[in-house]
Image (cartoon, rainbow over all chains, first blue to last red; front, side, top):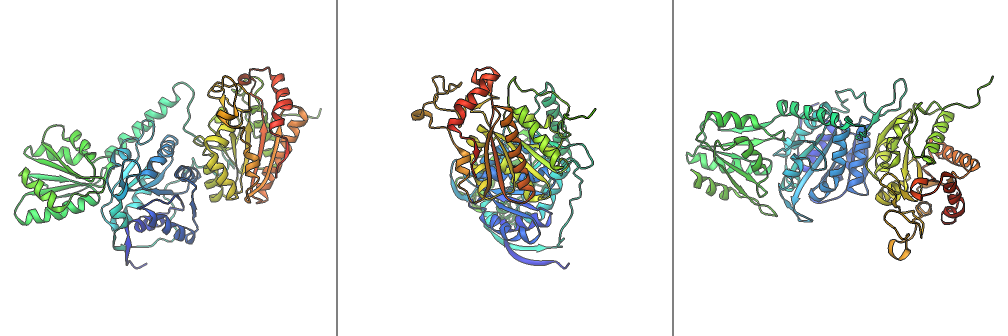
Length: 354
Length: 242
């Protein structure tokens, strides 16, 4: 099929990207600023023969996803920050039962009910465990409408491959913003590449399958945890993803993801036009965090300074500090609760560092 | 010699972890017998609860999923919607179905999900040590109602089956018990009906089973069965509710 170009919001691009990636189950609950996503799914999912359910609650939605995933179907839910907090128990159960699923968080301001302005304040929640137990979700953070669409295929593929929940972390601005989207190819009904012999389908011709995260016998749960940790180490080795710009000659490297990286790029353009040597690292995967590029850079150039920019009060900052480990100064610039660091603000901050 | 009694195929050859006099083992077996008789073992997907019956999948010999506490009907909803050719049932206790999971219960019923629900009402939280359940009777002593349940403080026993009967999406609700062999047989008939309804695409079916918990009722197994007959059925009348 020929590619086509359409104007679409980030929320809708995520939804269509999921459909194209073979997602055939969606359950969600209305919350701003992700309502375009559930609305889009309500109309689109039946067109491809999938199941759409408006759940009675966020808890029901994530547990419906659990059920859908347990029978081997690519399944997704979406919400915004307060709703994602409610889903944490379910995400922990997905991780414990090693079920793949995709969870989209269109972040808004917090804590509490907060407001509906864009924010990046759920970084800790997404990249640490979020729910109870020693687990990780894969966390991907696109920075444009196009990337929001494209990344869905990757999210579903990796979730299936590693049998792990994958979180798409975008903010309300990216969710609501319209941009041109090039849909390169349309696959009418792609079959997931990975076989799922563990799925519940009825035990015809095989022994019964059990989907569980409860291990009462001594040592059973430790065994699961050790297997999970082994899997997480493999993911940390293989699935780091980032975009880098102008790092070779940089004196200051900005570190930002999602919408914040877009604003950082605009600031870099202005600064470089004036001859300032500024680079960028944009983590695309937030977990696993792209430690490789930081290690490489701080081993080669000791004179660097990092400036972490977030719509929070310093969450990704901790991951940067952990990997830089004192080899270079790490500075921070951030706002949250409705405030977004501006191009001018970033430029001013960078000039102070040079 | 003709063999007239044996273990159902849908039940594994394994002794259970349940306390002496507990009703779970009986209901597990009844379900297994019904599954055999309907010839659906290879189609069944069960949802085990959080509570005493969490490892029901160690005893049943068919596909099974756990669900978080109270969320069995959300998990079951997705499974049945995606795989209507399978027979999907949840097995839930009173705390799971009528306290922490009330929302999921009411909304799955109200959507008329074509599911079978086996609801074990033993008026107490068993696994956690005998605390008050939503179905605990007035005056009943539990770990969290040491002086007995008082309506003014803890409210009244929740009749969730009668509540659910009001919903248009609900096809069938029956309350049975285990206090005598006759009652056990009635329970089996009701369970079979609830599965048959799903096979016939009739919608939401629920069987509430008044089931003994001698340990946390602080009774002998025989006393527990008598208590169901003489006391519990006064609050929770047996029979077809819808």
